[in-house]
Amino acid sequence: MPANKYALVRYRVIDRCLNDKSKPLPSREDFREACEEALYGSGGGRVSLSTIDKDISAMKNESELGYDAPIVYNRELKGYYYSEEGYSIGQLSLGEEDLEALRFAAAILKQFRDMPILDQYQNAVDKITNRLTISPNPEDDQLDRYIQFERSTVSGGNEYLGPLLSAIQSQTVCELKYRGFRDDRIKDYVIHGLLLKEYSNRWYLIAHVPSRGGRLTFGLERIVAIQATEERFERPVDFDSDRFFRYSVGITESREAPVIVRLRCAPVAGKLLRTQPIHPSQKVVKEDAEGIEIELKVIPTPELESLILSFGSQVKVISPPDLTQKIRSEWQNALNSVQN
Image 1 (cartoon, rainbow, N blue to C red):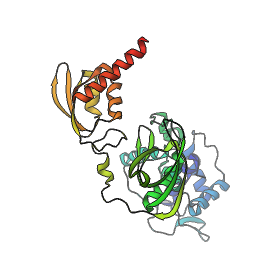
Image 2 (image 1 turned 135 degrees about the vertical axis):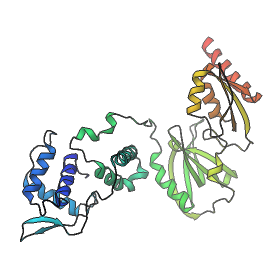
Image 3 (image 1 turned 180 degrees about the vertical axis):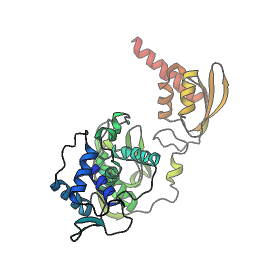
Image 4 (image 1 turned 60 degrees about the horizontal axis):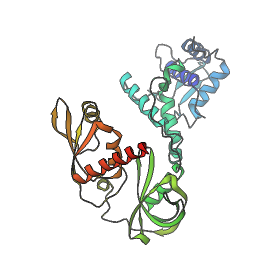
């Protein structure tokens, strides 16, 4: 189990004592007094010599800490020292800004600790977190008291991320049982996995399906079961994951050529879309007191339509005509449903 916050503070204090050139060969009592002083008022309580013994042992032997501290006891002088010259459990020479950046990155990693695909990296994440937790006051290291990350409410299918990633990397043919979205029936597919993609807090698999002669997109939350076979497949030379969604907004694949979409944005929506573009191709082509006009080079997908509709009257489609008509029809259908 990862060490608690008080233990991490004690490790740092012991390390500091061992590197204090003015007081070489500190004793267990020296460690104990220094730890109590560092923890005074933080709720860490008194520190016993047996606790110090456990701390030294953990620093030397606990693989999860990753210190492998070369602490040696000199029986003649009755004190401890590092057998490796210049060793410290915090050997990285980092400034406070660097440490804060690393703490922030570690906090982001912790948000994904419950995802099965990251199980193999959990010890590494814990090591980073443990090494960066150095404050005597436990509350100082609780970053979530000051910042909240977006957390997905959809967890279905996350358990398949690991097996699917492995199958994609090894180019292994898989048998998939999948519950259809429209009819809710379970269907069987033989797939060649090509790409995993997250969109709007959901994970999707893009796979070649030989029986269909093309690619399909599967939502992981709809997968019932997956079984790897002994068969291997050749990854299509014409499939480029970097280019696959180059002109798409969302997860919908389309073989249509991209078009220029022009949107008229009211001031509030315009300010938002300046800082959070719909697509990398977005550019402002006109600006006045009533807002801005933006252009996108994209394929009109259902996700793009939904995004435009989410802005209500703040965003108006100027072109192309087909997209203008679709948005108008959606608004009319919504109005009819309210009136009925």
